[in-house]
Length: 84
Image (cartoon, rainbow, N blue to C red; front, side):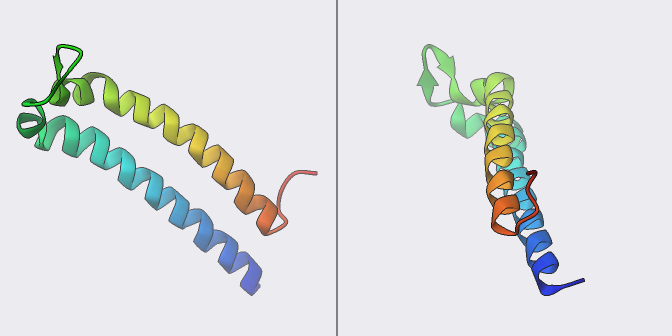
């Protein structure tokens, strides 16, 4: 494998790890572990911990899908492996 390919895969894996880490924090930590601490904050009449458990992780996942697609396109172009 060339150095360019190694750099491409390092960037790809780093992006995946970043996205999965954000999703883990939003869905598991905010929705389960820190739910009691977040429930003291209310938004729109709903406790914030409840909101993260019910809606927040889904919204975060959808945003991360679009973010991943955009960033992966940028990485593909940078390393010249994009579709022509």
